[in-house]
Image (cartoon, rainbow, N blue to C red):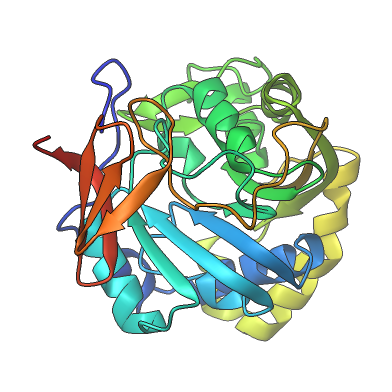
Amino acid sequence: MNDTSRPVCDYEGSGYRTDFWEGQGREYEDLAERAALRRLLPPAGRRIVHLGAGFGRMTNELGGYDQVIVLDYSRTMLREAQALLGTDDRYVYVAADIFHLPLADGSCDAALMERVIHHLADVPAALRQIRAVLAPGAPFVLEYANKRNLKAIVRHALGRQDWDPFDQEPVEFVALNFDFHPDYMERCLHEAGFETERRLAVSYLRLALLKQRVPVGLLVALDRLLQPSGKWGAYSPSVFTLNRAEGDTPPAALDGPLFKCLTCGGPLRREDDTLVCARGCGRWAIRDGLYDFKEALPV
């Protein structure tokens, strides 16, 4: 299901894995992000949802969780994740729009979303959806592209960039590609029902010259030393945050049905390779282990 008033960035059929990551000189970024995630995310839990998981690059960091919901809008990416991670029942592959999550309220006790929110035109709406699927007190690790980074500050000071990196409103520098000010993001998280507990500044050393001349192990070690500076003021290209779901609602529903109807919010029952709303509102396909909420089946 996709609300046309909120455009969704669709990686269907893209070569993101090979065109952007594998063999593309981004070992430093990958390892620095993994280091940040390990600092923030509790190592174990019952059920975590990896939002915008793509081809599963970071999903293998979630080995301590009993069940991992691997969720993305692109079926292509999910098939690549399935090939990478396997078809063990521990992984649940879900194709869905983040603005219309098909997960039951309170059904997850942790969430991760990295390299995704910079594609979202309505951050508050997405954060409300994420908060709704989390049990009270659940940790949510969020990464976002930082508008107030050192490169942007220098470019603006030299007159080579129109937008002000200190202005708190998001900037869309390419269609469906946004940078966010840390204060804006913290405000949006708070309004959605999260309290930000930690903030790490990541990938300060993301410069081609450095990556060409300095061993990746040393770059990552230096990055780890710099990451805690995010507590006082993040000026890095990427920011990782640990946020906690506040309040006592929705109640934890880890033992109940995982999926809900996108029309009425009621429970879904499985009939062969189909999920069916108990109230007759909608039907969704299960295709070779992939729960497909991208498009509904005829009722």
